[in-house]
Length: 616
Image 1: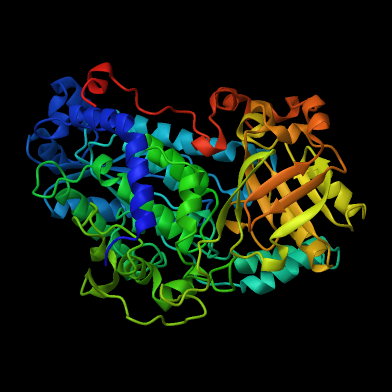
Image 2: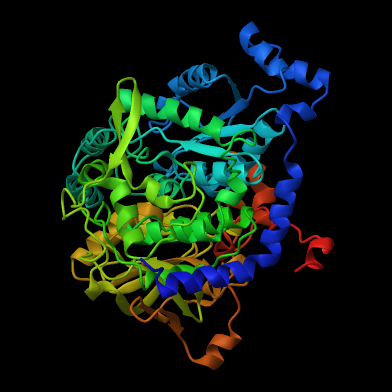
């Protein structure tokens, strides 16, 4: 199937826009690769420090100039359900690599925090910045320069993007990403929503709510709704950084262990010493980034990736923006219904056909690039398969031709919706994104007076006091990366949902985030620029008429031009955002962070060396 013209055009303009940065990046990548095993660049003293504590047999291999060394970089901790299974993985990996004639070393751990725990708490203001912290921690782990390939163990929201950003700064090394898998299904998503709304209305006790939540989040593995964590896993599959179908195999099962061992042996095949050298910095290119965006859009994935994919691309010298997301969304059909865009969870999705089915449908429809590097070779079609146990190992077979449940997963020719459900909004308030996959058409345009809030707490106090039983647009500002680290604002969702269910016309406009759990209430998020960067949300006053029109891409404060021009941004005291819960340690991040549309990053594009510019 020929590639769709819009896919081709967007890819072409990304490549052209990125050319000087990508050229500089690839030059740096090639310069970093060492002839022979990577640790051959170390002195004897350096190397002796690097294997001093290892078993004699592994130490002997590391002394040799031919045996390969694989790094393990892990987000393991035993508090977070998604990462707890990684406790067992290093031993599986070491045994698999040893059996193949190499050595695997646990190079370093990275932090892993859970937005589900910090939601609505001060600690949430560290969440977005933890992504770049994870990238930096990955760089520290790899700075010893001992390794020929890397296995990255991570799952959740900021962890996988952070690991990939770190990997791309060591882009001369092959990388295989190793997931832990989702927990088994617990309480249904529809019941969970019902109980949360009853609690928000004061009709259930905290004990009732906690019991319900414990039945939802009940075991080792990733949360089963299609938020950022599981969107991460979809994107790793679409970019060819996982072994096929690895994303949604549950933890602590024989197949999960077999996939982990297979990932370890595959990493050895990708090194500069084999016939399949695949440095991650060349695997992640303009086509694979477009494939990731298409996979995100077709599955109704997390809006956090309008930040994370921008940051990932930047790390590889590639420049993308929200126009690219919007133009692709217009032609990419929605082919899944996974909560919050439906009632199914990722286990139901996997059983219906899963990631391999999605990739095959999009490739066959000409909506993804097949001619890309992956951890298996140079064709994404190799990833349109599902894993099965084969003795003690794993084998792959083609995914079924038909969906196992067309209420969850459909072919591209018969989608749930003709577009990807992600819209770009523009107007005198700036640029924003809105996810409309779960927003009914009658709620996609809201024209109502503004009610301005500067904190989540102020909004919730007004709701609890009964002051919000009317039509309004909540303008929640000072939630951007410079102001307070751009926290997610899910605490508002049940309250807004209750008001909408009562027949009120409500919406949210904010420079903060809502992420993968963005649901039925229209929310213009990531408004850029934020107030502290000169954004116009600071000019909005209570009572201003706000137009949020997702169908036509409009976000406007309908204030007479002369009056608008005379206003100045309201000044508020943000000092409370700067201390406590470790926030004072992240002052440098708040001061240096880029805009949301630039990925909210604290690192820059690769420098454009003068000698490279001369050749362009």
